[in-house]
Length: 123
Image (cartoon, rainbow, N blue to C red; front, side, top):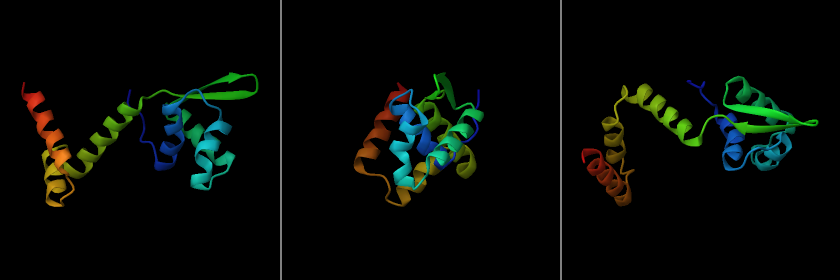
């Protein structure tokens, strides 16, 4: 099932859930609101959006809502990477790597990891 794109603000709210879940809106706000200058209501609004997108679910425990992610962090990273490749490089990886290499954005460690990955893929 494809999840709608998660905005930067929504990402800030779902990230604590990937680290520890379930959490209440107050617990999430304690982790993210100060860095973003958000109120508890802002965090609740972002959680509602994530629920509507199918990225987060909640259960009630008395009067509290406990939130948990429905998508894994890695699955989100893969989907966002694919969107970036599709949008900027017509779905191709090599032009992205070429751009990074031209801008000296690849460290020796990055190059070694890419080489090892290519060897693994060819095996």
